[in-house]
Image (cartoon, rainbow, N blue to C red; front, side):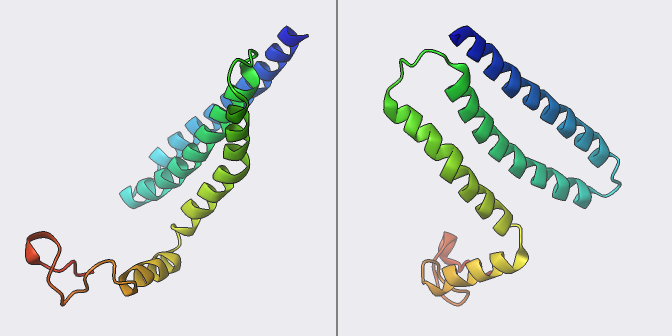
Length: 133
């Protein structure tokens, strides 16, 4: 029964991974047809964000479901469950929020107002120069 579960889990995970790989290769070919370098940059940056999340999710799934021996401690199971249920949505939210210019502007203003970095007129930074933004 354990061998059947291994084959089933490996088949499902690997088949969906192959389909996703085909999809991303089609996206890459379509992006390379875009004439502007800005379009390339924007699209590949979005794909990179997706790939980070996909790597975390598939890495966790492969680790949890394809490995049949449970020689690792119980805290590893808990850490993997935490990774897929809390870390991935948080990373997703953070990545897509930072793509919004208004969110970046508000975050930048909050950091500068907090006094963590010197303002334009203050000395500091590299070589005694301000960090003028």
